[in-house]
Length: 157
Image (cartoon, rainbow, N blue to C red):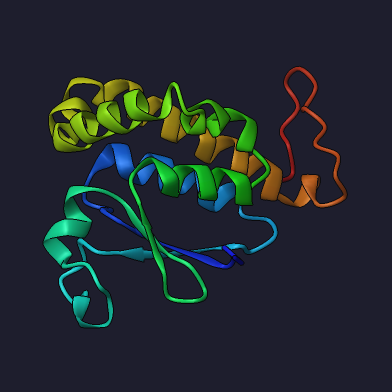
């Protein structure tokens, strides 16, 4: 079964979810992932086998053949697409899979509360990632080299 391109259907209104999706977007160098925000006002679930309510509760993804994945399986596929399958590999082990599936459901159900509790950390992580992307995408980094300015020297970026 061909899993890519994989279309992730996610809740952008959740800061925790958005941070994770932004991470995947930044690593999506091979363009194997597509992203659809199911929390968008104009999102229409009529072309999907799951309802908007179901997709807002837990993450879903659609494979090129139209089949769906949901929950932790989506993360295994998405992380595999960006070369980080080693991070999610333990979630597929037969002895650990039920535990990860159970934990994900509880995290997903409480994601807004968790986002609020760790919002300072989430925003710091997001700001750090944005700063790194900005540096990487700046004019001085275009050749794969990002020199740091010397003391009292301004960068021309």
